[in-house]
Length: 476
Ligand SMILES: [Fe+2]
Ligand SMILES: [Fe+2]
Image (cartoon, rainbow, N blue to C red; front, side):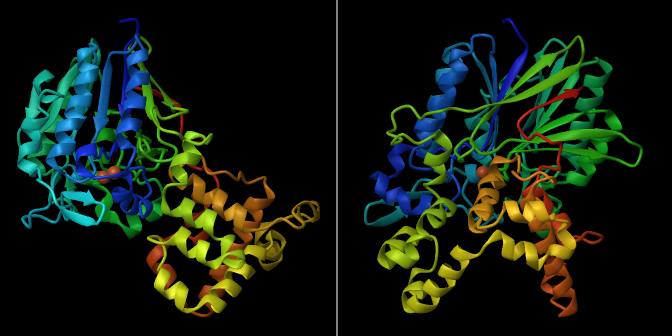
């Protein structure tokens, strides 16, 4: 092998073709989601094709939500896909997560295995949590020199001088997905051994250790890695500089620094089957102890007619935000087409019952100008006269949709020097001021203590994480 490297994918949400009777049968489920499901097989194969073409790289890691619904057929077929990589000489490692097994009433996981039929759905055969270790033991545990039996986590020598510790979420399938004391003790020991051997340490786990936005852990703390504060302290203390995560489906690279200036990065990769779906390619330089992370995307999906669209536009158009963006302008011209476009996404019965109000509201929203918002928040946004003139006539909705398009793909679009940034900052700050005046308490639920509403909103507008969610070089 010419190089020491590792491909990382996550949240492949694979749905076997054996589990849905036709594309149409699964389409409704897909439309209400933010990932591609009907073509998940083709998307996975297209990514694997890129890996197979790369003769310099021999290692692949997939960090959970391997399949979408914990059904046996999807697991069987997913394993067959993995074998196309191992047959070509690649080493493949996986961890599993909550979508990989069914809730059976014995924990908080509520996923059920479903077979999608043209005229409804029926239960499919479930895989239980306890089966996952043996099912996937060839992809990690069997190649490792240490396994934590309780969680199924494993530690292996990836290359001379590089250790991969893949943490398998343990817990109850919802409010605690992480490690318990015993798992933490095992992990600590493995890191100590690696440090004594002067190995670079790469950690990986499904759930986030640093949230993509602070508001995430403030509002849905249970979606974080169970024990993330303890793991953050451990990483700082032991000098582990990187952990690769998934779960949020958000492309994000964030740095955590403790009070003593010790730090690490959480490199979260977006779902392979999301619109911005990508793999990370990690180049490891053991001489300089650097970890060079890039993002690899695919332009097309093998075997799928993408009607001339890019990968992003094709997948974005399948899900609810894309459906809403495409359908909103139809509300005033063709209401039936609008209802059809948003069915399964918005409450169509309510929209049907109040067409006059909905049309009027959407018409107003569609006409809303950026300059109107700019005037509203002028005092707080710092927009100049020149910028005001430059955005004359520009509509607000495309700006809001542009922000929405970047929620999962990362690299939020408007830097602080743009008029859009200033307009939004002014609007949000004025809104907070009004909310305080009128004592709207709902904001307290969203805004973490010590922060403002703009602190919450800013990372959606501008990438204030590390500046680039797609690549970074980390001293390991
Ligand atoms: Fe996922
Ligand atoms: Fe997940």
